[in-house]
Image 1 (cartoon, helix red, strand yellow):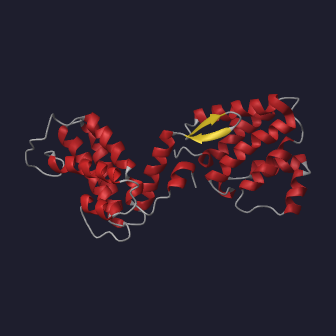
Image 2 (tube, helix red, strand yellow):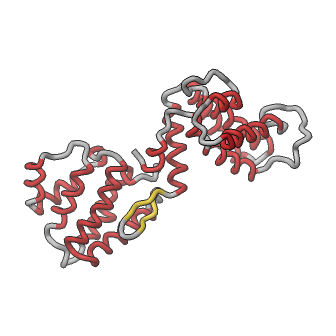
Image 3 (cartoon, helix red, strand yellow):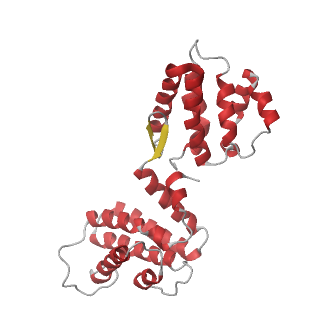
Length: 276
């Protein structure tokens, strides 16, 4: 599950639109107004004349709305705009009772399918932190489709994460951290102008940092990996304070993933936040 509305669009008919109209006092032309808004989210938008013909006929509007597939839509961002605009249209058509009923149905739908949004009044779909992180990881996977080395390093890291199910041993935990550093190096090496192969050199060559402290943060993490025995090297360390455990695995996974947008020109942060 990608956590996006477009991935579960086909379920909205059963979960939102049919319950919405399951009242005697719902205006007959409700789908005329809904399709007017939906038309703006389509890849191939109908002409003014064709749209007018559809929305002038309640039955034809309902059929056109119901027949719209996810592949007809222009993307997640366009669909979000539709769901927000639908609330305004329903409010103008049937007042608070109808628009509030829609708001509650949409909120329940988001909860049921664990979508990447918080629904706020009056009807605003706000990306959640979990949704943003999930989108970032998915876009890293998309990078793997463009580069064989990134694909191999991502597969290694994913396999290391899966191996933890066999036992949360120190060796498996350090392997996860090691493989993620290698993944970051593979991603960073694809940046324009980068000639280094190790993460420290790559970070010093990338010019995208907003402040030197940001670059120093990841260099400090790299310093930990290079000094802690079993992560990148096998020699003992005088800086080691305790054995590594699962709290380190979770913390490092999140911290290192957060630096990914600085290491790649192929990630669009606006798409990560709002969807395509």
